[in-house]
Length: 533
Image (cartoon, helix red, strand yellow):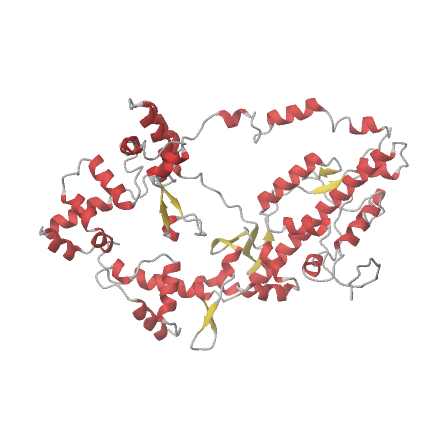
């Protein structure tokens, strides 16, 4: 029997989550810091003529021209926003609706109305090219600003290339030397990090992929076989540059370069680095004394010399400028009670321009295209204002929930920190767990215990002997304190630390102690033995 294909129409009812433009914008604003949010608002104010900033000395509130409830020519757009925001059936929709139970005050102060609704006059200030150019020249963030031309920062590669240009090496050797410099990482090593490593930091990842000279030549379009000798000369040349140690392919070579650079190339320190690297890492003084057949005093002097070298010679010139954290939330004690306050001083207070509102509601003779443009910009402005208000309400609720659960921490410190996960806060404020996860991203709180990321408060815990849960952060702090107080010659093993914690009321396995110690980047007991504090 032959199969036949037919086209037909049918009705089917189904539920699905649809992210409307308003919801998408609200989601995008959640993970932004206060400074990033201020940049978004300022950019939107530049692009959207409907938005204007309320002066700091001007209070907000209903005015006679808005009938006390903010209703005017934008009421239709505002109602359309509310309808679009509350669409959806599950997932993020209930979470994003939370915090919008009271309307945002969008009513402006009374201003002079439009005397003429001519569309050209309405937009002449907005489209003034001269004004835009003047603003660009006075903007400190503009590339034309004189403040941005006062100084430049020289990084590691610029520093090395300047030395290469003053060298009298042959042309191809100098070209390969430039290729080697371009392949150095920020620490000054000729290597790359394993792409499988999540953290771009070799100190925490440990997986290093050396960059060979053949790869450097191939990247420059040269035959590796034909230019190998010149590549070796180019590498030797780069390794003579300042800072000493750059161009090395591993830590051993880096230390050897520095020892020779500073005039210690004929000392036993070179032998220690070349042949006894493991004993050097363990600071096995007794083993080095036996291997070198030298007095212990001399061995200690050579170890001190090696430890004074820089294992990351390029970091001094590759250091990134400091990034200053501006707290998004303030938690402090007022009249004996902890309170939460949002740090929104840098956020502009927004409102819809009354001139454009009147333009829509006055029955203007402007063409339909102009009205459509103004109406679309009005809707976009309302989306932004209410999304910002919703983001602020959500952030306050999350911070207030954290305060209620961690009040003992703000009073007493890390020892009083309680385990808490995202679901605890989500259930407390009746929001979705993913919304809480987004709002705590990149946010910091200024507390009596210092400036802390909001993610700091979310962690697992262990049950103590008393039955109460103990925070993993508090346990890590106890482990750190025990290691700081140990005798240098007799460091505590992970099993001994676990026994001490058990005596203090927290039963913990040895492997859990090892896990927490490694997360804090603390060496093992064998590696800590004999190391100076």
